[in-house]
Structures are given as C-alpha cells and as structure tokens.
Amino acid sequence: MIIMNDARVRVNKYWIKLNVFPSNEFLEGNCSIDLSVKRKGELEVILNRGLRVLSVTSQGKEVPFTQLVSSFDDLDLKVNSVRIDVDSSRNVLEIRYEGEIRPYEKTFNYVKDHISEEYTLIRPDSFSYPIIGALNFLELLDAILSQSFDYRVRVSVPEGYVVANLGELKYKRRKDDLIEYVYESKFPSWRIDIAIGNFDVISSSDGEILIFSMKEDARHASRILNHTKAALDFYVSKFGRPVTWKGYTIIEIPSGWGGQADVCGILLSRDVFVDPRRVRNLYHEIAHLWNVRSRDRSRFLDEGFASYFQVLAEKNILGADLDQLLERTRAKISEMCEKTPVLEDTPLFKYGEYKLTDASYFLGVWILHILNSIVGEKCFEEIIRRFLREFKDGAELEDFMEVSKEVSGKNLDRFFEDWFFTTRGLKYLLKGLSEEEIVNKYLIRYQ
Image 1 (cartoon, one colour):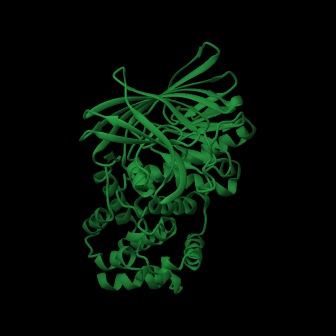
Image 2 (cartoon, rainbow, N blue to C red):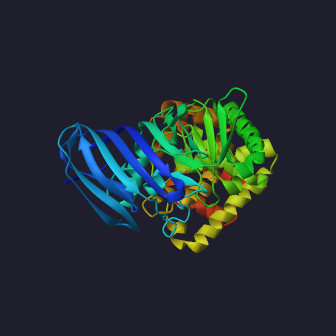
Image 3 (tube, rainbow, N blue to C red):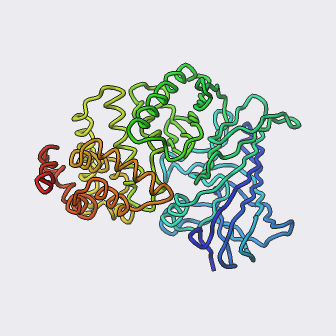
C-alpha cells in the first residue's frame, strides 16, 4: 500500500542540513521530516533523479527503504522514487542523501535548477529536497499546494558565496572551512527555496523588505525596492493588510528559471529584475500575498486574482491605460484558443482537469473586472477583503461566489454561470463584445 500525501499524511516540519560545493556541482543533505499518518504502510518520497538516498532512520533506528529512478504515470519526468516503511502515526524520518541536481527543462522549460559556481537553486520544482508524494503529477501538485509546514534550514557553503532564503536569518557563522547560514520559516509554507550565489543585499529602512541581487545587477535593486513598496502600499489601500505579513524578501534568479511566490517573498527572474518595462511581473508576484489557500484546481483564486490585481497596479502606479491592459488579455485569450481549440469549449471550473490553467491568468482578469463593474468599486473591494478574511485557510470557487452575492446583495448566479460553469462569457470576449456591452448584459438584470 502506498500512502500518498493527501488527507492521510500531514507534513508538520522540515529540518534540512546541506553542505553545498558549487565548484564540484555536488551536495550532501540530511533532511528530517516530522509527519503524521493515519495508518501504517509504505510511504513514497520523491527526489531529483541526480540525488541518491544513503540511509533512512527514525528515532535512531534504521528504516527499510528502496529507491528507483522512475517516471510519473501522467508525465514524462524521471525522478528518484524512494519507498519507506512507516509503522506509527507520528514519525520523524531522517533521510541522508547526496549527489547533483539535474534540470528538468525538457519537460518544464523553467526548471533549469542545478548546482554551479555561477548560481545554485534548491526548491521543490526540481525535487531537490525530499518531497512526500506519489508518481502522479496532478495529485502531487494538489498535495504540494495544499500543504503547510514550518522549516529550519542549515546550509554550509565555501567562503565567497551567500545563501538566500525567504525565511528569517537566525545566524551566520564560520564552521570548519565553510560558512554556515541558518534560516527559519516566518510562517508555515508549502515550499522551501534556497539560492546560493554571489549576492548583494539591501533592505528597506524598517528592515521589512529584503532584496538579494546578483552583484552585476546590484544597481537595479533600489528601483525594485521602490516598486515593491509602491505595490504593497497600493494593494493595502485597496484590499487591506495581506493575509500573512512578516516582511518580504526578493531573491533574483537567472533569466528563464521561473519566478515563484511564497507567503514571505518571491524568486524574481533576472529579465524582470533588470528591465523596467517588465515591472508588472513584480506586481503580479507581490499580489499573491492577497491570495487564500486555494482548493480549486482552475487557478482562478490565485493566478486569476494576482493577474487582475497586477492590472490595477499597472493602471494606478504606472498610469497605464486600463482599456489597453484589458485588450492585451483579450488578445492573449484569443491566441490561446487558436493554439488550443478545446479551450473554447471548456468552462473555467474544468481547467485543472484538462491542464488549461494558464488560461485563468487572462480570463480571470476579465471575470474580476466585469464583477467590479457590476457591483461597483467599493463593493468589489469589500468582497475581496471579506473573502480573504473569512477563507484565508482555504477556499473553492463556490466560496467566492457566495461572498460576492452576500456582500453585493445581488443575484449573481447568471454571471458566475456564464464565466465559471459555461463558456458563454469566454465567447463574449472572442466575439469582440466591448466591456460595456458585456457589463450591460448583467446590469439590466439588477436594475
């Protein structure tokens, strides 16, 4: 019996100790995972295909395990699949491993992660630390996104390298011939990100915003800091304080490696970091602070929200033309439908099932903007505030629908039917209906 990382398994905390040797492209790892399981059995742990488990122990005793390079059953992606016997409801498994991190860019173009003298990135996207799960990618993705744990990481590197993490730096010290950095999570998180490179570091005057920039890009850090403060101030003015807040860290990563957002910061791609014209990507990642934990696989409640908030920030901070921003997303939707015709006949609530979640970035902008126009700006802002407040621990599409109807006092069933559960709303966009024409279809019903 394989125990997957669903309701039967809960990860409580990670302790990770790493010795990383960039010049050798090699690491030594010791990962302890505190987990709760509802019944005994065989647990599956996934690692990068370049990493090999040396031993597994629990309470000082050796635990039987097997490991084999295997592929996901729904994706052409090879990983080291490690199966471990668990015999109690509460376990702290200590996994020793070593090796290299091999990139997965043939499957996921952005996962170029590896260990090198230029840059090292350790994160769940490349399974570069042990991930509890099973070899079904959609199930694993759901499990990763739904989990929340504390962590403590202890990373030792040769002198001359800086270790960056989105948590709080507890201390830095020399230990033997290496420099040791110790970080702890500020809030329970669903991921651990560790970057190692030749960083410069700057912070805001109050120390709440921290930016790690590659030395050659240090001149851009102050601009990024100013835009971060502007975006945070704007979003707070509209939607209240973030769901969680204990400061914010930005770590620059190489171009094309794929930005990521977490509860306390982001990995920001170099092409965004150095190009003032791409600051909207920064606004998008910061907007994820105003996301609830989504139980909806369409990605509307996270990426749809962040994309619309980004549009509002572009308009209000940069002075961008709202109509042009909306038409930019309409054009992208049309392009996606031409490339993937099934999208035109697939309602949003099924995007996860059909692997069409990228469309939520763009259709989500229109859904939220039309809703904003129907209920009015102040009411829309109150909908968002209440939704974030009441469902910060988890929400589905239906939860957002109910809050929208309760706060607005309007029967929005037809609106949500058109945009969530059928493709009627999408087809309004493809037919070229103007914003006013679309909004009027709903306003007439509420007059």
